[in-house]
Length: 429
Image (cartoon, rainbow, N blue to C red; front, side, top):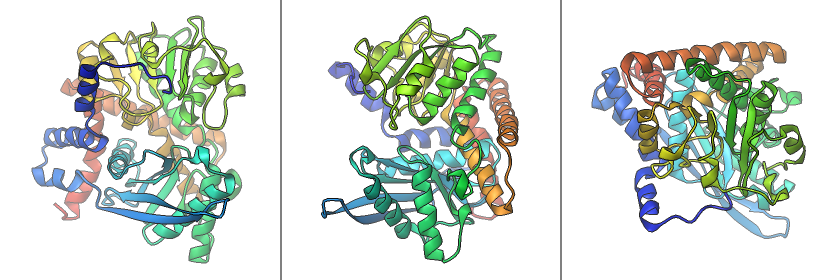
């Protein structure tokens, strides 16, 4: 958020201590999940870090003639099940540990929705908001040249992520095809339809989150029609989610972007906001009556969806959340300490590795269509996604009820089981 509230020294220190970093918190939960599944310490030692991480330096000639060198990463967590799969993000705060953690999450997501993949993730330290169209193209092509020996349709399949889109995927596919000297649409997913992209890919993450909200609401006897929903983040996932929830009859009472949040207890005019949203998901700068991030999470509502960045729900604000359901559309928006607090308060938390798995699911559909050379209608894609997400939600929810554990731990157990078994059968552990 752009207008963060001032925090006291004691609160700030506590938040830093509990959030640590994404990799450490991910390892904490995956260790517990593997222990509950009955695996020995050696399995955790294998799965706690990616099998390989490549760091690259990418020289790019900027529009002013200056050459700027960017740092990029590609992590491949585990390929026991199949090729690795995961997005590429362009962001000024990308770190190696973040990319490692996100690659582990991709392995877990693939396991939860039962895809033949391990997890991968990539990132470049840059700010695309300060780069021209042509500079972004040069950077995208340079990154592919740097990682080309590590990736491919049977090795590691990238996709869009934060501040990357179908155009960037198109440049990357074109560059990879030039290097390999043959057309290779299956190298990357999230492409434009004209280049072998799948119907429904752009909205897939939000569709998956919507299905999880609906399934969670059933368990808490909440009617979607009239339900009050707060969405933090108005990027790809957040904006489409706001539209889907609005169309389903819910009241989207608040949304936010990097500069602030908008609130109307009677429900925001989502179509009006979508018409005025820019390509980076910004809309609140057009308004003067914004609220703060702190206030956003304390609003009266039924469902909260953090769809922005990590560590937004912490021990400092978890006690103030009034929603009955929290559904994580973003990666890592809730700290482990906050997860514990929400669970103790009886709030149903649907974790990121389940809720946001719609994106990788439809990416898999795109890859299958590329390999077959046979393409499905949008209705077929949505029908298949619906079945996958409902089945996956039920698997995770049922395990959480049977074992009397929170849904994050049960999701990690479901997600880790397949890659752990594949690694065991291969004789790696």
